[in-house]
Image (cartoon, rainbow, N blue to C red; front, side):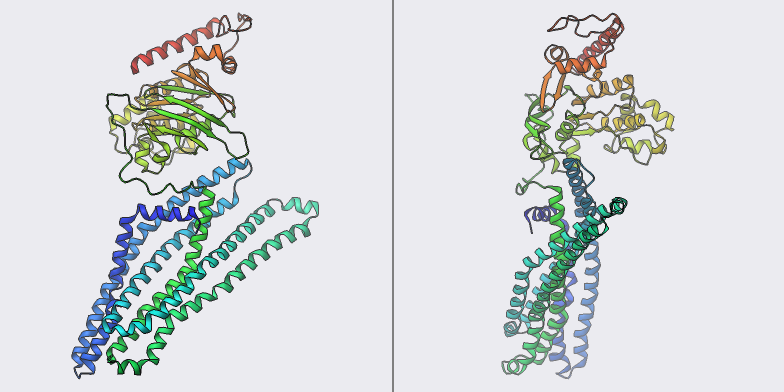
Length: 620
């Protein structure tokens, strides 16, 4: 098992220790009939039937029947407890695969990763089923084998001499072959992936193949992949013969030794009932458990290791940082003699491929609580990438992002509720789901009161929209909402929880300038920090500071400072402005009129700056 797959399994078991222990407890209850079976049969034979007391013999067998009912109850509870261990892992794997597939496609800059889709639809389900099966096989075998050995020792310790050595030899042979079997199982999975990927490509270009007369060449390539998949499957099948050998040594040899050694056992003082009880232990307890363990671990176990390894590779998991620290992630106090930490980027570098030029290089940024930052730049400058890195959706190749003094990587490994206390990101394409207006708005804050919901909706300017839709409990028809209306609902949803940082990644691009100003000013008045990744330069005029991205270079300053020092920022401002007929040409250097606009446009700038001053005074 590779390190990433091992990390996934260890993490899943660590987070659900309580559920796993509950499952183990019910597995013990499930195997009560196995623990009592041989011992009860021995008592029924020795003290009942052979002693001429059939009533006592039947009483002992009645005890075994009662134990069977207890085992049935345990079996039911095991099935219910297993779901609490397995299903959360499936949800986590779906998120990992989706994240890895999107990252892979973004890095390659080409079509979607079809192998990633296969992992999502097939391998996640394989892991889900195999994970549950392996847990059951291993737990059942360990508990059953322990029960059988204890039962044999209770009947007569000499029986262990005939059972324990061959069982250990057979298990050792099987476990020694598992690594080689896992390699061949991986080869089968990779061959199937290549075959599926080639089939998708072939079907998509079938017309071109026919037009170019390349049928024979393409058929040969496809046939080679089919042959490779078949060869890998045959190689695995040959090696799985070891499973049968191991099962024969560990399961059948002890039974044979007891049968052959019966005269010696009788001379050693072992009773007839004890020998019959040992046969029951082996045939009804140990052998079925061994069969399930060997066949399950050699089948489902191999699929689990290989499929989980492929999912971990696709997700590009980081190296295992070790077990998480005990206790919750520390939250800085709300009130202190020193200001609470805000948002900090320390030497952050990020690129989509190792050999490509980084989109962000060595970025340092400190944002105080309550500060409003606008990020501007030409298309492709890295605004959305910076938003994803700051929000923790993308991990930087170097450097660190901290929110409220806590590394974003630490927050990503915590509970979602804790992460929500630190940051919320609203992308350009707002997500609205089928449900009522209230359900959409309170999705991130389900405990919000009606007054808080109403205040959030009206603060971002979505009050008229809620009224037009029919009120809080009116069902939403997502198809009938415009892009701007979806953005208003998403803005109200993000406004409601008291997060330390709000990131608006062109989240108001479908609103008109007036509605955009209302929404941005509402978020700027909140106690937390605000970063607006702007598509209009007017957003910069409302900000305390502005970050200009130009390739992997960045420049930070106020509006006036950047007009004086950044030619790119002056160009961006110029694109937004409309040069009126009264515009004058300016000498080189600092423009005499830095806004270079007609009186009407200049009045708009004055209005913006006056509102910015008022907003800052309100926050202070």
